[in-house]
Structures are given as structure tokens and as C-alpha cells.
Image 1: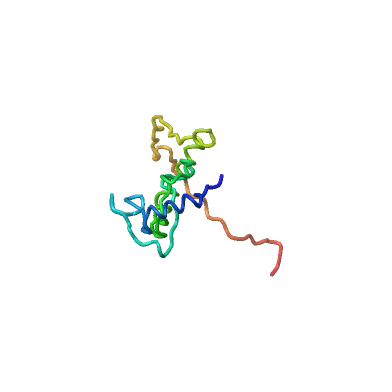
Image 2 (image 1 turned 60 degrees about the horizontal axis):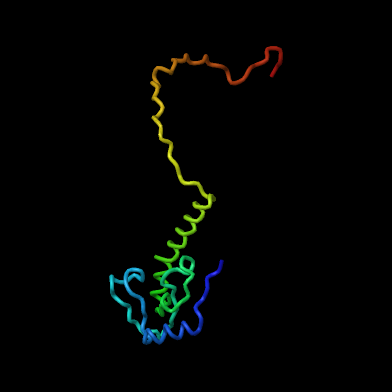
Length: 138
């Protein structure tokens, strides 16, 4: 399934709303809580789904933020990619493609005494490395 893009109208409205300044706010964009980036968008603008498109299917103006490139990259790397991976894992688990990890809950096997199992072995007698045939001459 591919990601849906915002319409041109939605992008224009988001850009007008932003006043040509980055709309990234808070920890989701790598900023202190409640702080807005406010960098000018003259160097480039990207339109971000505030709530992932894969999770919300919402392409409305309320879910669109006009953000600078560094803020969008930070959010994608630290928020969106991990969130999308979690969504996929949950879906696969729910439909039975992946089994939940289970641990064996039982008492451990008793440990045996290794010294009691060992038997003292006698060394083998020395053997020559080769045999000399008595009937042959050098």
C-alpha cells in the first residue's frame, strides 16, 4: 500500500497557515516540549502527515504540517519509521503471521556431579610409529 500525498489545495492552505515558517512543534520533531521551530521555509518545505498516513488515512489540512527539511527528517527517522514498524508487527501478530515469543516455564533439570561420572582411564601403551619387516633388506 502506498502513501497518499496531500492535494495541492491542502498544501497551499498549510503553507498560508504557517506564514512561511516551520510548523514543527515539540518532542515529536526533536524540539523541547511545546517549542516551535519557526525557521523560515525559504530553504525548502515538506508537508508532513502529523499522524502517520498508514495509521490515520487522513489527508486533511488538520493532519498536514508545513515543516522545514531538517525537522521532517528528524521526525521520520526517530518517530515515523519506528511507529510504522510497530504497526506492522502488531498487524502480523493479530492476523497470525507471527507467533508471540514464549518462554518455557518449568523447573530446570537437576545438575549431575561430573566427578562421579568420570572413570579414571589407564594410559595406552606406547606404540612404534612404523614397523620394520624382518624379511626385507635395506
